[in-house]
Length: 297
Image 1: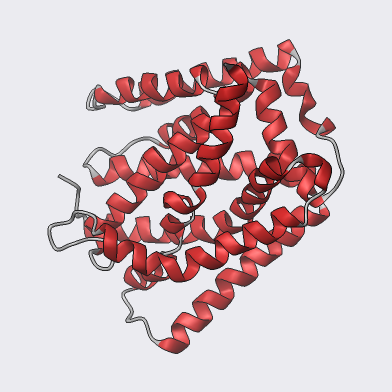
Image 2: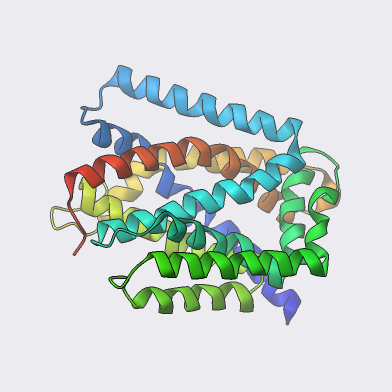
C-alpha cells in the first residue's frame, strides 16, 4: 500500500508540472507589466525575459556547483514563497496577517514531512542532488535523528502559537480549520503526493485566482473569476520551454536513479532556479496590489 501511494505521489507530482505547477509562473511577464503600470512592448518584454532567464540560469548553475547546499536552500526558498502566497491571499481578503503567519504557512509543507516522513522527504531531495552529481545527502541526514525531529516539531509548535497570538481577536477562525486540514495532508500522505496536491490545489490555484481578481485579462474576466482558457494560452509560450528543460535535464541524469525519480529531481532543480525570479515578481506585484486596496470578496 505504501509503495502504491509513493508511486501515485510521483505521478501526481509530475502531472503538476503541466497542471498549474509551471503555468502559474509562466504568466509572470503579464504580472510584472501590470504591477509596473506599463504597457507590454516588444523591447520591454525581451528585456524582462532576458533578465528572468539570466537569474534562473545563475541559480541553476549554482545548483550544479553546490547541489546539497542548494537542496537545503530550496526548502527555505519554497517556505518563503509559499508562505508569502498565503499571506498575500489573506491580505487581499481584508485581514492583514502578521509576518509570523507567513512563516507558519510556509513551514507546514516544508517542515512537517521531515518530522513525520523524514526518510522519504530526504529521498525526494536526494533525487534532485543526484541529477547534478553522484552525491549523497549526508548534509541533511541529521533529520533522521530523533533529537532533530523533536527540535523541528518544537519550532513548528512555537511558530504556530506566536502567529496565532499575534493575529489578534480579528483573526478568522476558518484559518484554524485550514491549518488542521493542511497538517493532516502532510501527516497522512507521502511527501511527494502531499506536495503535488498542495502545489496545484492550494498554492498555484490561489495564486491564479488572486491574479484573476487583481489584474484581470489575460488571467481573469471582468467579473474577477479565472478565465482558464485565456490563462492557458497566455502561459503556454513559457510553460512549454520549461517542461522541455525539465525533460532534457531528466534524460541527462545518472541512469541508476531511475527515470521517474530523475524527472522528479529535474523538476525540483528547475523549481529552485525559476522560483527565484518568480518570487521577486510575486512580491513586487503584491506590494502594488496592496496599494490599490482591492480586496477579494
